Picture 1 (cartoon, rainbow, N blue to C red):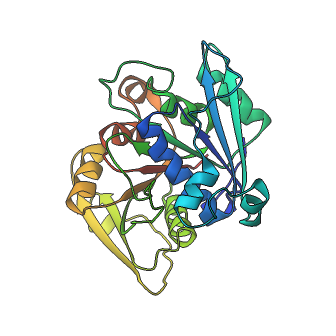
Picture 2 (cartoon, helix red, strand yellow):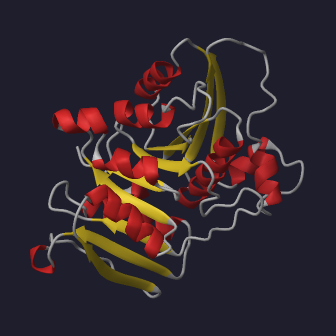
Length: 282
């Protein structure tokens, strides 16, 4: 897979779709981020059973951009390219969609994965079965998760960004610096003028990890502290502060407890009602 240390190095974005409403919300965020970073977007659907010649359900990029006012109605592919965007759609049939996508990403590396996550009581399907988590864990790609039942901050109808507050959990390990830089670069890419960054730490104020913060007009930084379980504290702080996004550095699973219950990041993901950006540190 590609390695990167900042979201501003994003050149290729990968979005798995199953045509569901939650997946369309993730598509809106993927397209918005593609525009902000002037990246190339790959939209992929893998089905274990069927191989139609055409999938009419695939997200319509040019129609969406026209609705957002960025392209004229009935725009051509050349007009899309004039925006600096490259878009491709891929349809495949495979018994194991996760493995199929991981193999594709090894051949065609991406910098950012944007995927929907689903409520655990949903009927199992190819994407509902924790595909986003498995794909992120196995590919080790920076991942933007968009949970079901949330519109997030990138609206499908208008494309307007409503990113106002970001929660960034910090600790000594893994280093939070990559998450901080990714959050800053996302704000710049989305052209957000006013933003509040909330740095969240479980522990005492005197034992804070060292971090470097960017200073720009309209940017506000503050610290919030808690004690107790880290994942619960993160979710509580995100709700209390009315955040629109959580950005976390992640090392993946470590040890028996993580294998049994999931890593802190996975536990946050399963309880979050707002998008989560995970930034691998290794």
